[in-house]
Length: 347
Ligand code: NAP
Ligand code: GDD
Image (cartoon, rainbow, N blue to C red; front, side, top):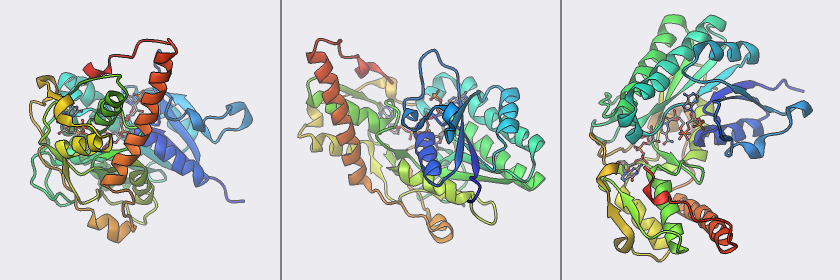
């Protein structure tokens, strides 16, 4: 029987981490994840994969934090992974303007800490994936590809640019198999509720069921190249299976405005956004990224990667999932269980 490959994931409790863990487990990997300590459980997205470690679970979790290099190094030594997928980050762009120092600490220095730990533990044997972002292109005109110069427009994007260049430098300086995936926005029913797509599907489905009335948004003219997270984690894995370490843009190649997303969501529920969507200056960013539109032809040609889920299917998937959630919420409410949470006011 072939020996299972061992992978270590930071950010395993996040949207991408949960899909990637599922994907790797299905391929027969032993998956280890770094989980940060929280006063409430933060493992909802991966609970369905968790088995009692006393009974030989293929997924194991380790307490650690990107701000704590000593622990990252210890985990690396204990786990001995062949592949490291570095997905952990303070990943909210708007929040990065409120918390620039922590964002840089976790996103930029967190990546550097991991690279240094890998350099010490095993310079060439470990394959390293860095979760780069289309936000790095910022104000660079579309379409954006691997050849497009970065023009970051937020503390988050600046931190990702730093991490990107560190990865390239560790590759060149120490011969590490280290790659940057430059991923455009990708969404799913597991998307955090304060990101635009999910905020809209959560709100519209709750409005439909009478649990909420208004959806407050910021800039609805911005355009994004939105894909499905389940498709994008396949690309991460493919990048680490190549003969040579290289950076890849991953995108669908089509772009839609925030307004279009919101309309598509409300349409499916027979609702008119004009009755419910209001502007709130709190959600505008001091500097915005106006248009993201990726050119992923290198990934298509070299990795054979193409996205499967398109815009309409993505909207359907997220609306269907959030409608079920809202129905459950209403059921609990009708059973006198609790008041509906005031999620209207969240970022
Ligand atoms: P996400 O849902 O926000 O997940 C972020 C993960 O990082 C969570 O597991 C979070 O833990 C963890 N984390 C945050 N701060 C940490 C710290 N100080 N130490 C250790 N772990 C920490 O993000 P995602 O959408 O899955 O994105 C995954 C990665 O891809 C991120 O690096 C993001 O910046 C990048 N990216 C995302 C997209 C996208 O459209 N989704 C596009 C391009 C790049 P908790 O669960 O405890 O919060
Ligand atoms: N979150 C949010 N909330 N965004 C809003 C709102 C609102 O109320 N109103 C308008 N928007 C606009 C934002 O200004 C932005 O132009 C767009 O909707 C998408 O915002 P987000 O969903 O927060 O995503 P993002 O594009 O800023 O960042 C995401 O994608 C990046 C890749 O390009 C995140 O996942 C990043 O981690 C990722 O790197």
